Amino acid sequence: MFSRTQHGPLVHAGNALSGLRTLVRLAYVTTLFLFGYLRRARRKLLERGAIVVLTFHRVLDDESYKRSNSLPGIVIREETFHQLLKYLVQQCDPVCLDGAVPGVRSTKLRVAVTFDDGWQDNFHSAFPIARDYGLPFSVFICPGLVGQNAPFWPEQVSALLRINGASQTKIEEVIENLKQQPATCRDAYLESLRKTSNRNWSDASGADQLLTWDDIRKMRAEGVSFGSHTYTHQLLTTISPKSAAKELYQSKSTIEAELGEPCVTFAYPNGDCSLHTRQWVSDAGYSKAVTTRKGAWTAEGDPLSIPRLNVSEGNVTGLLGQFSSMMFEYTTFWWASRALSKSKTHQSARWSSDLEEDSIGQQRRHTPKRSASRESSQS
Ligand SMILES: [Zn+2]
Image (cartoon, rainbow, N blue to C red; front, side, top):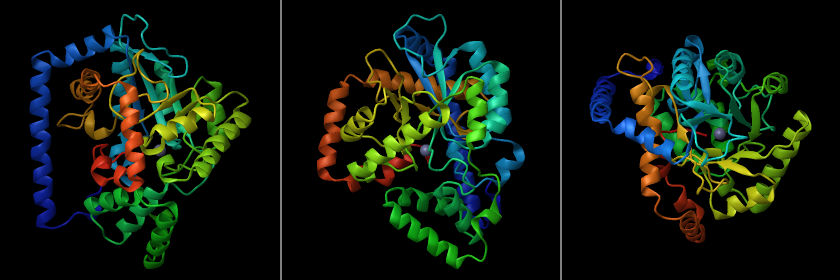
């Protein structure tokens, strides 16, 4: 995907190391599979009446996959998505997040599919495949960005850095650092990149477009549900309460006006939330909110802090690049089950911890290390 910018012995050494890591992970996952751990993880989730919520962002055809400037952690190929949905309808009970309630008995594990950001490929690629399987899904959109030609800032930064010859590692590092900066700093950096580049970001890729209201209405008419992802994709933990309230209310009211129905679901941009942001989301009138924290939604869980598992091409495919049900079960059920085992601590204690961190300051809470644990996803 990013071979255009990768040259030299250091890159080859990096690729070899990456290949070795892949082999070690595959060996580990195969061991878990052979000893029945993955099967037991799924059974444990089923017995708890848990709902496993999956996070997707983009589903790309092969041509768009080559041209896109999105980070690998938010992309999955059409064929892989197709095979994944086939697995879900055969092995699980796909449900819509909007009407789902955890703790209910089910013969198969319930799984909810969600998309963040509102990319146009959700309409052109994901929607037809999901419709063929009769699989429901939800999309969290930013009304202030709907219909815009310019993609999100990470794609613009990626495109411009690529034009300037930066490596993929460098690009991901820059983007992770920029996530922690105020919007004004990001805009200034982007502007400086534009000035030093002799090409516009849009020359690099036309594959990174967002949904239009027309796309959204067509999908809604066929059962796809829509929630809010703030008005302009601001990380709530990095902006003032006044700005956050505006982002939350304006997004909700715009979606409601465009679709003519209540909007009560929300996805925290980048998954970043705290006790304060949870309260703001509640005050704005949302009744369900999803994060990027690994885990599964259970009857004891907080509906305004629902865990999700991020799914991308790299974490659900095998050595030959094809969909692997074993890798998918490891990426989702295994990690969700582990998170449930570890969650002896009550939600209130977790929020208390966040509150304590709030008092320490926002900078420390948004360390690159924490972001890296999200596999560079940009929810
Ligand atoms: Zn997002």
